[in-house]
Amino acid sequence: MNCVLGIDGGGSKTVCVLMDDKGQVLGRGESGASNYQSIGTQAVLQAITSAIYGAAVEALKLTDDLRVRGICLGLAGVGRAEDIEVVKSLVLELQNSGCLPITWDLTCRKYNNSNIVIYNDALIALVGGVGYPVGIVVAAGTGSIVFGRNHQGDVKRVGGWGYILGDEGSAYRIAVAGMQAALKAYDGREVPTCLVEVFKQHLGLVSIEDLIEVIYRRDWGVKEIAALAPLVDGAAVCGDETANRIIDNAVKELIWATGTVIDAIFSHRELFEVVTTGSVWLGKSKIRDKFAKSILAMFPTAKVIFPRHEPAYGAGLLALQKLAEEGIS
Image 1 (cartoon, rainbow, N blue to C red):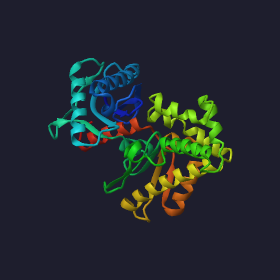
Image 2 (cartoon, helix red, strand yellow):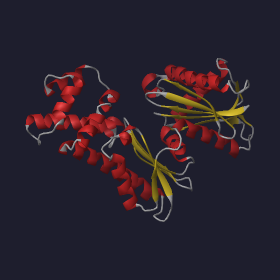
Image 3 (cartoon, rainbow, N blue to C red):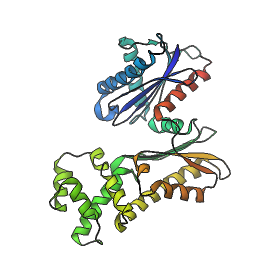
Image 4 (tube, rainbow, N blue to C red):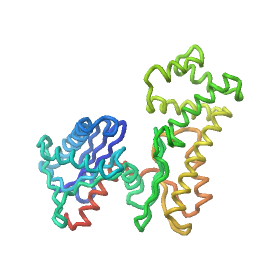
């Protein structure tokens, strides 16, 4: 059976879907992180291998012959030409290893090169979320980025500069703002906020001053800090003035970034969809409702949607698109 692989690799997990030539998912596998900028190439190779193996084992319940004609990888931390070459070499190493229960046939007849396509993780999130490569994805999870592509193939990216230089509207930024506000309230520099007690109770602190030990001496990283964002969200739901201000500021940042992308590549008469992905949108403080209401007021031809498919499925669709462009079935 001819099929393609779509792979979504990020800082926390790697997902692979194995699809037939009609876009039907035959198998899905999941493994650990695959951002080679932070964990190294061999760890990435292991994660990708494990995810593909999981998908192949599922697919082999439906057919005993899996012939992979194309593969698309959307990976975090892959943006430069040299990054793409590193990832291609990993796929070729995997192809030559013979360690997976699939047959590889990645030769492109038309251009005499390989049907290995590599994109950033924002594009596959857009294609998976919308279902085709036109629209805007607003990703707000641990980090944040807004990415859009129009019918002419023009693209625009805003954000995605990481937790030091950017990530406005992200869970990390919300959590940091919450802790800063709690400490300022403790100092007497800001109005009282329930965030002081919220952080104390959640982290088991005797005093809010003990945040110093938690953040600076326990080797906490971006993921651990971002995981505190729901505390700020919960405080906002309870009516805390400071928490609501933090949430509103996050919404404003995401609206600003999205509006910048829209103005750059879409006309105000053009219909397009905006898909929201990431943990921030799951909050209970109506952050997504506020965002959607503002975007629709500013851009009436926009439609804010939930993801139709996961990013790995978007990668699979892009692999199929590559084969279709080359007349391969």
